[in-house]
Length: 235
Image (cartoon, rainbow, N blue to C red; front, side, top):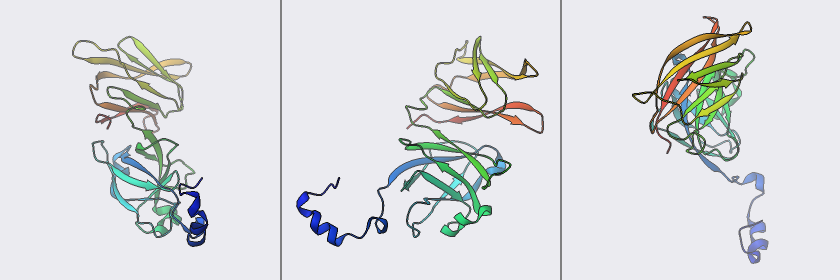
């Protein structure tokens, strides 16, 4: 329904161009770009809105190996974001220049774009995991754990177990702690019909901050490993 009073409908119909020639309603999103490993980081990346008019200017961004308060604000016509190595729109048609494609689901207005190594048959240089980092989806003091490995994984904090199926994501919002506000951690992967320990250590409680934890299969070492990225409090 038009937002204009009915009395103006006839006049506007005559003067406005067809819908396809006008700029479509846009939404704004705040994004931070994170490299899963150092060789995926770069200071020369460009964010494109592929559904916007062809003359829309790309936004220069950095893909970092860490998280902080810095973010880029993008205006999107649709839900897709394409990141390439060049500012020109034509780079979207050249697979060697496309770093990755992200899709923001409805309602996501603040996100971490985690750049992962490309899949074997991928059409871009990276896979991108979209992490909703809003206060509601990723609250202060929590661990966001993603199991990207093909094996079930169990993380034990103090004596409390957390089980993760392959591909599963869980939010640990109230981890058990010991003296010093820390959690003793043990990690296990289910392999050859038994739980095999893959790591142990100490997880400091995030406090007002947050932590992104990623379980992944290290094909070189032949086992599941865990990688952590400390994050700041939600905006």
